[in-house]
Image 1 (cartoon, one colour):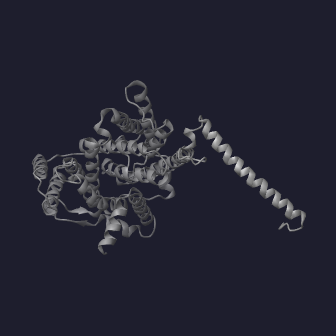
Image 2: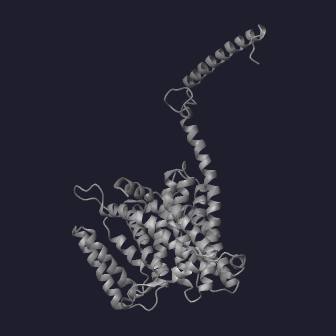
Length: 451
């Protein structure tokens, strides 16, 4: 493509709606291929192994998407988290308190719902972390499409909540899904991160320096036994988000601008393509609603997220100094709580990690993630549409200027001059209608009535 065409495509991929559409399209393609005669081809491609065996990187295509491409997504998430900590909502503890508490409760309650469901029905507790994650890309895309008239603070609340949620998911992956740690490899990976930070702080620039270094850090993290996506988050957090000297943008903002199209247009859709391909036959769908583990995931995403986020927010405002933004109502928080039930990307990843020894159960859990996310998205879509319509009406009322004074009418209702101007306008319209009535009567009397 020409440079203008490449710029157009890159700018489109930076928008939340396009990224969400690509993610959804990739998941649909995966489901179609996994449930049609193409399933054998799909599985053979996903399971095809490629990579140097001597470096322990002889991975399947699916694993490369999960451990490699998804690291790019977590790298961008790390930059977003750093930006929120330095210059966003998380910088001010008072402003950050409510979405942070909401995010924590939105992780704890779904896990408890899963544990209660799975233990009550005699299932495995290994998947407790699956419904704790929120898909930041998908959730923001749905909000962008349906929330055209919603207040900006609603997006800020969701973004902060999702960023904290991503951090929690990263910690869960690092702490609970890491086995057989190789300390030498981990130490070398940390040394690589230290070198990455040192070069960055000294102002060294050039992709030819950082891309090979990032690849080495990732490979060492993968060899250490810690999930390789942690390397992406760590590198994102090490980038500087402040502006110095004559800089128009911080290095983190510049790098995110370059990498986000790759994340939204390549990394996340390809991960979804190889992770969402599960069987959704009648029997499989029946298992989702009958087996304890899938049921726990569905209830955790749909019910646990709503109860955790909305309940946690209400309790925080009720019993602490946390305050709800003046632009938001509790109905807005309820809609966001339902929207956060879209787990998808990270939930699919945790589902694979939780049931690596039982592929059949892993597929059932992934199907449950898709269904739970779909139910949450539909419910959130209805709630967001209702709230959007209400804010549209409020916007119309707050900007209506019938007397053409340059000041919205809502601010002049107690001003006698406003009512006098409106009376004059209506009297003028009344006079025009009287004149038209006389003309119509005259036409009818002379037989010239068009009717």
